[in-house]
Length: 377
Image (tube, rainbow, N blue to C red; front, side):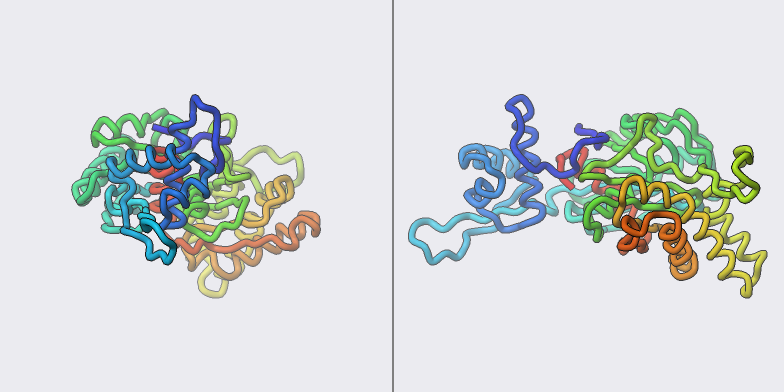
């Protein structure tokens, strides 16, 4: 299995050294077909820079594995035998995506290789933590696997918390997990390859693979907690301790001055998590709703401004309940970022809500599987 490693490009782009050539070239052929169906073997050789012999060998292997299929012959006015067109066998395998990011319900889906959701499954969280929450994940995954009607390429899981490249959840406070080898436990229980990653990182993968992302981006996820995922120069950023993007515990309530001690009650998460926002909106009533959202957006902008400025980001994507994120909150966040950064770097900044809706983590989990198992996205 190939990991979605920091610094590794999500999409293969060129030939490499002989020792890695076959795996890389397989991925290169698949990636080319995934984004441009209906190519012949000769087309693939031209697009990838591989020899026709290498392409023919790889295509034969991929057809045998039900990853590529022949579409039939191209209508061609040129003399000679018409070329046979190829495509990824988009229904030859399926994937299971699992989303643990919501504070009230776990979600799962069966998807084809195109990211089309074929069936959906849910399990209420009901406040479960620790072993009970872990068992609910396992049972939900088993139900989703049972609904697949083609070979399952793998299971991708987006979970809150700090997650290592081996799928070990170092800490996920909202689920009561610490040092939980989630990837290993699920793989043993399910008997199929499993890839686990932080839910915000998974959301960034979804925007890169299935969304409208145009380049470098930051995805901010707002749910039971607050996190973010970063893709820079085509690679996912994880950080030295796998906590890149963990902005939820950054303190932004510093109205008392620079010498204020760290206080979790003044962090991004305290201002912006869905339960916190909903509680403050209830207390403020209808007349105070806009002010609550505006102040939360300002705090988000305070946290994001240094990141936008340091990385010269062109796009920040928000993922979470649209009734909370649209309007006052997003407008206040963008205004705050622009007021706290150089105009040359932030005037063109796009801050938008994801177009993938609540499926963003499920789709990102599918990208985890595509990237980890096939080297494509």
